[in-house]
Length: 346
Ligand code: KG4
Ligand code: ZN
Image 1 (tube, rainbow, N blue to C red):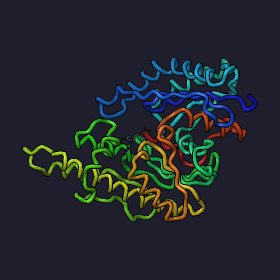
Image 2: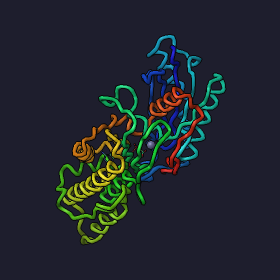
Image 3: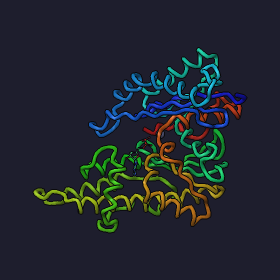
Image 4: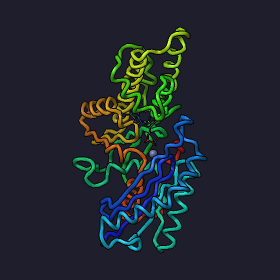
């Protein structure tokens, strides 16, 4: 194949993932293993995550390479022109496992190893061919909202990113998870909270809108979480939280987050008048209420809105391979990321 193939690994948090893409960004094979063992702790435990990557990554890599050979008869690992892995930010144990395997494979094949910044990979996902109708030409605004990330990034060009604002305390997904926990829902709590909110009244319980109307596009969620906790603490001790009340709290919390996010993104678009596209990514971008609010903000400012499919919004190796391909095309294998994206996000 003229463009060659790229193999990529993602292991920065609790997803173990591999992918093979051709030089045009076509996915030959990919797989994501989500570690289930963290639920009982209510969050990702770094030691458990690293050991799970160590246990599962080699077999997953073998499987994805075998599946690539089925998708593209004649494909052999020797056809790889590069191997990529997320090298940060993230949990160091998992990063060591992933980059160790990646470097070893690259060394054995005599091809370059491409270290990929995990946030850059989220930022460039929208540029995968065919993903966003009309394409995602630079520059665009990225809202990255997940369990570990919460920031507005001006994606000016390849390797050129500006963090316009971000959370000053919790990430958005963290807030969803903490409030879900207060309401007795499982972990991760975002999807469960969204389901419960469907039965509730978003106007039932007054909650704060942290930083709403403030200059810039920083986020804050810890006060919102505290307000929910205080609301629960103020109830009679002998009275169990009924489903109706829990649903009202869930819906009111979600409405507060949506109000804040819409306001912050409106400001971010104002800080980036050259953007004609708003991209939302990360697990929280799966939330339908948030999506529709973001779409409304974008359309009010005459900007297109796109959210990659959830599978590519959350951690995966396709985005890592794609970032390597963009860099290889630009001839910048060892090039890094400019701007201040290297701030640890987890
Ligand atoms: O991107 P992701 O899978 O992993 C990282 O954190 O990198 O995001 C997971 C986060 C969790 O906090 C989860 O509760 C949240 O995204 N989430 C949601 C929804 N689905 C996932 N939050 C709100 N609404 C959802 N539907
Ligand atoms: Zn991520």
